[in-house]
Amino acid sequence: MIIVLKPDATKDDLKRIVERLESLGLKAHISKGKFRTIIGAVGDEAILQGEPLEVMPGVEKVLPILKPFKLVSREFKSEPTVIRVNGLKIGSKKVHVIAGPCAVENKEMIVEIAKYVKKAGATILRGGAFKPRTSPYSFQGLGVEGLKYLREAKRLTGMPVITEVMDPRDIEDVCEYADIVQIGARNMQNFRLLKEIGLTKMPVMLKRGLSATIQEWLMSAEYIVSQGNNNVILCERGIRTFETATRNTLDLSAIPVVKQLSHLPIFVDPSHGVGRWDLIEPMTMAAIAAGADGVMVEVHNQPEKALCDGPQALKPDRFLELMKAIKKIAKVVGRDL
Ligand code: PEP
Ligand code: MN
Image: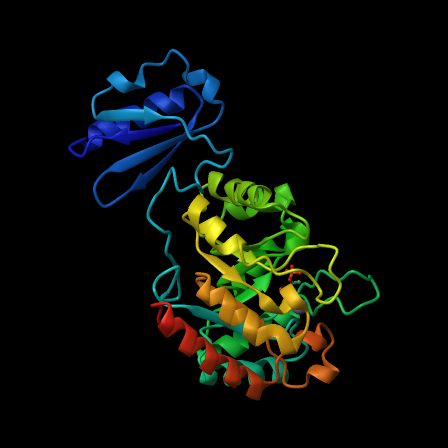
C-alpha cells in the first residue's frame, strides 16, 4: 500500500501515520520526493482493510501497489535511485565501468590490473575472493587474503572495490574490505543471504539468477530493500536458454523492462553474458545504448593463464579500445563517461 501525503503534511502528521502503521504490525518505508512524501506500508495488507487511513491528517490518498514487488517498484518511487559509493554516483547521468579480473589470484596481478583499468577510465575495481565454482576442484578464490589484496589495490589507485559474498558467515569480512558487495547469479534466491545483506547499509550488486525471470529478480531485490537497505544495483548477466553459441544469452531487453518496473540502477555484465572476449565490445555498446547505468567487464593481464574465466577476459589493450567505444556510444545516448 502506498500512502501519498499532502504537500503541506507536517512532521507530526508523518509521525502519527508511521505510528499507526507500526501499531498494526506493518513496516513503514518513507520516500521523500522533491514535492511530496510517500509512505510504503509493507506487510500483510489485509490488516489495512477497514482502516480509514485516508481520513488521517496529512494523507492525500491511499493506493494499492499492484505488483508483487513493492519498495523497488516505480509505483512506490518514480525518481531513479542514485547510490553513492566513495563519491561516485551510481544511477546518475554518468555511466560507470567496473573492471578487473574474475578472481584475485595474487597481489601483483590485482595491483597491475587495477592500475591499468583506472588509467583507461574504469571507476570501480572488481575481483572475486570467494568464487562460486561449478566444480569443487576448481580454484575457489583466496578468501580473506584476496580481500586484503583488493584493499591494497584500492589504496594504490583510489578505486572503490566490488567483490562477491556467497555465505552469510563471510558478510562481516567482505563488508570490512569492499565498497560494494556482489551477490552472484547462483545466490540470487539465497534468501538468508539477501536478508542479512539487507540488514547492512552496504551498496549491493544483485546479479540476475541463471534462469530467473525479471519478476523473481525484483522480488530478490525486494528482500534486501525490505530489510532497510535501499542501496541495490541490479546486474543483468545473461540467462540460460537453448542457445549454445554463447555461454549465456544476454537479455538486453531486461534493461528497458527493469527501467519501467523499478527505480533501481541496472548494470550489464557482458563478460558472463556471452563468455567470449570477442563479443564483449558489441554487447557493451548495445547495453549502454539500451539504457544501462554501467557495465562490469572482466579484464586480465594474461587471460591464457587465468585461474578462472580466461576465455571471456579482455587483455588491457583491448579494454582500452572498449573504453573508447563506450565513450562514443555514451555521448550518442546523452550519457557521460
Ligand atoms: C562473477 O561476476 O564473478 C560471477 C561469478 O558472476 P555470476 O554470478 O553472474 O556468474
Ligand atoms: Mn567470472
